[in-house]
Image (cartoon, rainbow, N blue to C red):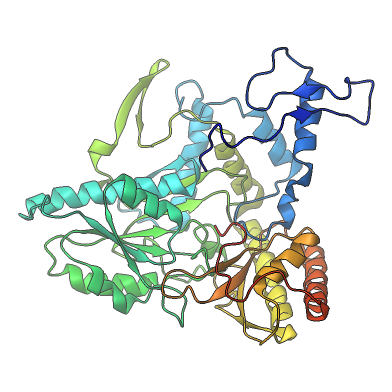
Length: 465
């Protein structure tokens, strides 16, 4: 979101229930610095009051991002906020924790021990996608030139499901890549491998398989894509690799479905990204990207930076940022271990199945996909009723629940859906409360005299990613 001087509202007026702390009625300028400093308690109270009506994060069923960490995790996060993640020479122990996380995640993704896998932390999975995409572009360019292809004849392209996250659209715009979006299969609500080759040519830098489409929670058939590309690459001038956008599923699938083959066990998968702040269970924003071998990360993208007394290799878009989330990720790995993560995710899946059953039992909806992939409940309204999903979102929000309503991607955008993202902090008691509120909201709409939203409405209500 971009803001300007036109986006202004009236000046703030402070006020406190404890009148001895401040002068009631004192104005605070919003868009310029106050002339005088104020006490820390006053500043805290003013900000706390501003945020009162923003909603409870744990009632937000729209976001995949973690909204709870244990008190001990919050303590170590708060104690390490001041550490600069980029400054490896001054914080060598923190750098070692990042190294451990890279190795732990690489093993979860079955990186071949015979190769030299490498990876890094990022500020969220969006940066990780950018880095994975850049590596594919630079590698394609070198191989295309060696194959005698005129790389200036037309723009390189990237093949991806139409259910992509917006960071991929940004990548294609920022780095002058043609995005070739394969329409999601209406039946599977994911990319159909049979459709991939009609989008691929000598200018394709790679195919992105999505392990957890944000619209529906479904996984692309990455093993199927790999088989298609294995046959294609035997005669291709430039072999086409796979980058797996596992923002949501990368730290979920290895614990719930270790037998699912989607990762470095597939020969064409050269890089994978994930969000540590989704099912890695860390507060935003921490991401990770791993390459199966140093061959797949062009050396011209790695910079040796002399910084505060030490020289270090870096491959990142962001530079200085807090190391606290990296430390939070290692805390979770240490705290939970494999069996702990598995238990947490199994419980989250069970709660998603409970909510899916609740939705089915009403008789008003059709479930799109299921909870066999991510613990996400996605459905459309099928009954001929006077209200819409937008109306149902409004009713649920009256009870504090934030539920997104939005159309599916292009060519399926006549389908309006609701989506619940179940996270580790969404307990069974919360799910039961939500279930009761859900059923009560439907009953209220059935009895309502006036309805707010038209059946022709097609906008986005709530945050979909």
